[in-house]
Image 1 (cartoon, helix red, strand yellow):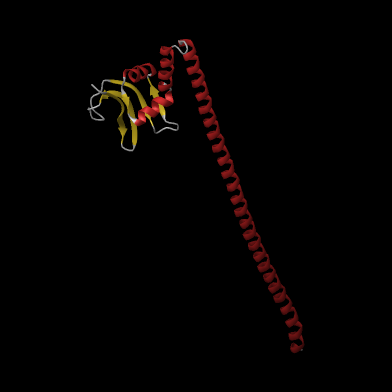
Image 2: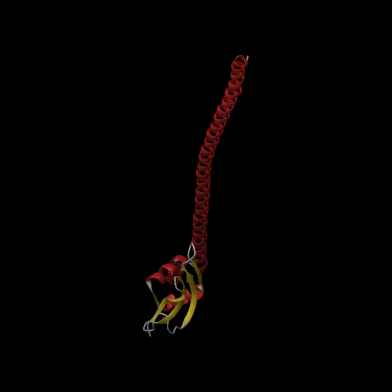
Length: 188
């Protein structure tokens, strides 16, 4: 029986979630499977993989052929590196402790890389937020400046109107005073 390590789709429409399963090569994608060895969620950033490492290594060493996507997942999780290191132990290149030490060093280096990527992403997000805030402040200052100019123009127009009204009232007050003496001689 030819066995494959493949993804079995789950989840809802538009939000795929996969199980990593061991299945007969002739079985349909979402059909009968022999064993479930993990899950893969591509919807998170970075994609979340929950893998039973020992069972995955067992099946890879047994000869189960993974699909391309599963091969990439297993490679990122270190299954193929451990298979390679175990091959070195079988050939006598080094012992089991040295192989485990090399694997642990690789895992630690990979973890540092992931943390660096996460830190860079967080920094980029923070910088983008700061830049957006600065742009928003600039826009708000421009709006406040325009509002202040409008208010100043409105106050100037109001002052002009009041000055014109005051001038009219002054002119109206002066006109009757001038008219009164002119009428007084006519009354005599």
